[in-house]
Structure formats: C-alpha cells, structure tokens
Image 1 (cartoon, rainbow, N blue to C red):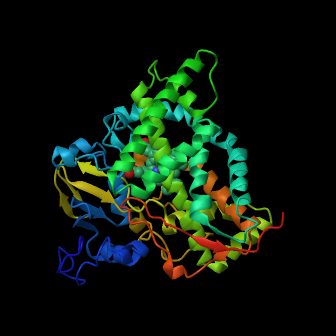
Image 2 (spheres, rainbow, N blue to C red):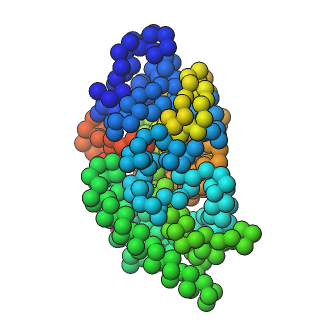
Image 3 (cartoon, rainbow, N blue to C red):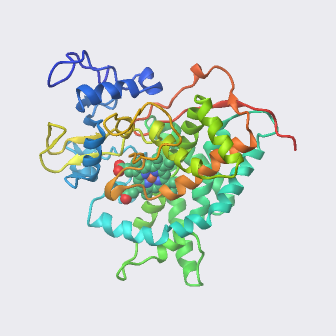
Length: 429
Ligand code: HEM
C-alpha cells in the first residue's frame, strides 16, 4: 500500500499507523487522513503511487511558507530522480520540450519575465468583458438538458464550459473548439495512465497551436484580433516579446491550468451544495433576492472546503532546508497539500463546516506567492456564473441514484468527480 507506514508519527511514534493514502477510500474522502497527518506528521515523506518519494506538507502555516519559499524550485531539472523520470509536474505531455517552458515549470528571472508579459494580455478588464459570453455559454449548455429532467452535470456541463470559455478567450475559432474538447478530454481521462492517446492529443494540440500562433502573428500586421492569444503575441516588456515556443507553452498552460480545475470547481461545488441543503437554500434565497455577496463568499468557501487542486504542483529543494521541523534534502520533491492546509483548525474556525458566509477565508485554493493562480478572476467568473445559473434555472436540482456510488478521479494533483448524475423538474420551453 503506497503511503502506508507502520509505527505512527515518524518522529514520535504516536497516533498509530499512518492511514492509507491514495486508496479508493482516500480518493472519496481524503480529509480524515489529512487531519491525521496535520496532527502527527505535518511534513511527511511518502511513496507516491508512481513510486516517486515526496514530502507532503499539510499544515496551513507550513504550506503557505513552502509556497512562497524561493529555495523550492519549480524546475523539474532540480529533481534528484534520474533524468528519464524527471518532468513529473502532473501535467500530461509536459515532457515535450517545447511545452516545458511554461509558468509552472520555471523560476525567476524567467518566471518574472513571462508572468509580466502574460499579465499584460490576461487583464482583469479582458476577463470582465468576457462575462456576457460566459453567461451565454452557461445558458446554452443548460438548454441542452433542461427539458429532460436529468443530466450528468460533469459531462454535460462542468466539462464543456471551461474548455469552450478558454478557447473563446484565446481566440480558437468556434469550428475548431470541439477538437480541443476531445484532446483535453483525453488528457483528463488518461492524464496519469496510458500515455499513447495523451501523447497523440498533446502533439495535435501543439501542432494546432503553432499554426494558430503563426496565423495570429500574421494578422497582427493588419491590426490583429482582440483575443488573448493575439494580446500575448503583441505584449512586450522592455521591447521583449514571447518567442514562438513560449507563446505555445503559454497557450497550453492556460488551457490546461484553466480546464480541469474549473471542471472540478463546478463539480465539487454542486456536490457540496447538494450535501448541505441549508447552505444551498441560503444561497438560493440570496440569488432570488438579486444579491451577489453570498455567491462571491460562497464560491470562495467551496474552494476552501473541497477545492479542485488537492496538491499544488511539484516543487524541488535547491538547498537543504527545514520545513515544519523536518530536514528536506537537496533535490527532494515537496508537495503542498492545499486541501489539507485549507482544513487546518489552527487557521480556520470549524474547518470541516461548509459556511458560505465565511469572511475570514484566506484559503490556499489558488496557491500563494509568485505562482498564485493567474486565472483566478476567470475561474471566479465561471464558477459564480455556473452555480448561480444552475440553481436559478433548476431550483430543485437533486442527486439521481445513490450518492454513495459517486466515483472520484484518482489523480494526484486534482480532486474531482467522474460523473455527477442529477435530476430536476424539467424546464418547460
Ligand atoms: C496556477 C488553482 C483556474 C491559470 C495555479 C495554482 C493553483 C491554481 C493552486 C498554483 C499552483 C502551484 O503553485 O503549484 C486554480 C483553481 C482554478 C484555477 C482552483 C479554478 C477554480 C485557472 C484558470 C486559468 C488558470 C481558469 C487560466 C485560464 C493558471 C496559471 C497558473 C496557475 C497560468 C500558473 C501561474 C504561475 O506559475 O505563475 N492555479 N486555478 N487557472 N493557474 Fe490556476
């Protein structure tokens, strides 16, 4: 059993054996195991299902410190594994060299330069201007099943919404977006599994992006489009531009980082609301009164309570350091468990309670420090629009079938449901 170890706390031996990590039961509800780790082994060395050894950081204070610690590099070249095993950042296809130079794989000063360039194009204004489009997409997807009285909310709603949204924002023509949906679907379904299909999908996406970037660059001479990719190509900092490879890697990471995360924000969010009828009723009453305050604090709370990113992406120690009292050696991988930190009773009152009104809520669901989620404003817009529209149009939404049958994806970085069957009173057309 990977992760299981006899003898309790590695330092004190207290607390009984380490609960099994990465089992099916753990995938369904990892929070009791995280509570144990926070208490007995807050910085815990474990063997991951892939066979790689890594430190798991589960307390809020340690997690926040690790996320901002510049001695922890994002560059997989710092991993002490042999070269053939490198590059496990949790992102399928990232071993392809051309796509490696993305934000989540690099450190300052390269990170600073690329992040500044992308921030010039991915502005809050661009996201705000996108609001009507997200609403239109949301309504169109709900139209697809509203008259039927039942749906699988993952496949028919949470999955397509973010991929169409980010494609639109990047400027991928509508007629090509279904290809993207299929490639991205392959990457989600088989991200940690068989590599053949994933490799083919990444290759196709890479080829398509190269051609699209080429086209957008040519169009810039004629004034260019007002999409994000054109903005990325045009953005310059002290006269510096993104290279062709950097632009492709940036488009890829935007697609990838903005996709499964948002699928799971919607999926996990609806799942949590269906299990907390009094909280859901509060939100529905607030929406019916035309308020937005509870929706805003509510989506943040859903991120804290059962967020999409269970573990932050990989970090590697570039010098010996001490974390939560443990000595971390050079080259050791460190995984910050956001889901555990965000339930830490040392930071949050009643951390296992879903409280949509929670105000003191500096959760780590979007990370912290220089790699803080670039897409947080877009994720908030999508999450708020999706949940508000769903609960308003289908007010008696409920589980279909036995909620005990729900299956969670067994990935390492992300936490999300495979399916979420629901039923509701059909909308009359
Ligand atoms: C980084 C979470 C949606 C783009 C991150 C990180 C987290 C995160 C935790 C930091 C990872 C680390 O430090 O290892 C989320 C969640 C989302 C979401 C929970 C949805 C609810 C999006 C969207 C986009 C996006 C919609 C873009 C379209 C990025 C990018 C980075 C990032 C580019 C890397 C930033 C950097 O390294 O400087 N996200 N994300 N994310 N996210 Fe998001």
